[in-house]
Each structure stands twice: as C-alpha cells, then as structure tokens.
Length: 181
Image (tube, rainbow, N blue to C red; front, side, top):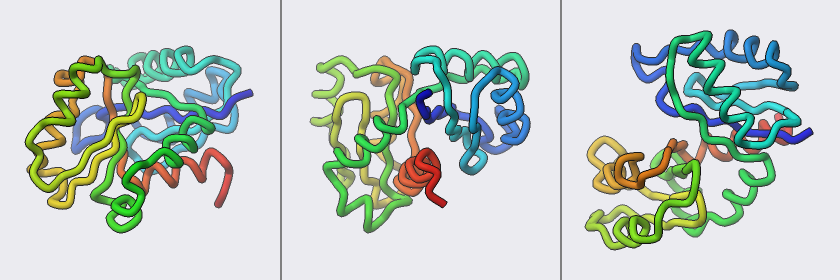
C-alpha cells in the first residue's frame, strides 16, 4: 500500500467550495482508502491506497463532486515524491527563513518547456522562481496579494492543473505522511 498526498485545489476559500474535512475523511474511508487524515481546512489529505496516483486523484475528485457538489481538480504525490520535492528545493534558505512567503506549486504534469522559459524570463521584481519537474518553487517576499509571479503560475498560463501550498504546509504534510507527530 502506498501513502499518497492529495491536494485539492480551491476548496474552502471564503464561503466558496465548502468541503468539511470530517465528512471528506469519512467519505474517503467509505471508498476504501486507509489511514485517511487531513491537514488544515484547505484540502490537504494524506491516505493509503493500492491505487496509483491517477486513480487516487480521480477517486478523490469524483467523491468531492458527488458528495459536496464541488468540482475541483486534485493533484497527487506519493509520500516519497513529496520528500523528494522537499529535498530538491533550490531555495531552501528562503523557505526556512520565510515559510509563509515561500510556496510550492504542484502541477498535474510537467508544463511545456516554452512556458517554463517564459516563466523564468518574466519580470517578477524581487520574487524568485525555480522549476523542477512538476513543481514550481517560488519566494514572494511582498506576499501573494500583489504577486507578479503568482499571476504567472496559474492553470491558464501554464496549460496544466496547478495547486500551491506554502512551505509550512508542505513540510507538515510530509511529517503527517510519515506519521511524525
């Protein structure tokens, strides 16, 4: 059985796309997922399954659509992949210094190379960005509210499904997947 991290995009933002974590955990358990646990209220789920990553993503998204009437993509990484995301972070000093201002954008698939080149050459002021496989690492010293970089890392701009988590959430999800308390 593999431990998976399912990242639901865009749920529980203000009053939109409401999904309660206890009901989500119960629904996923009823579907046959094991050891289902969640982190905060923004769609971070850790679970165990015999399914592959695509199967987990489909099952989670289908359950959320059916039980909560919320259509949202789900991006999935295995616990080992998430640990690799942390190990590959090319801006570890920024992440450690300002974890709330550092985020990892998780992509459902690798973005086209021409879009990566455009992102890396974009005028983003004092923000920093690095792309590695299906992840975009970014530091937003002025916050996300007026981020030039944030506008460059959307589904529409990259032509793939994207969901982002700040560094605190990334490292807490890794610990939760390892059952570190």
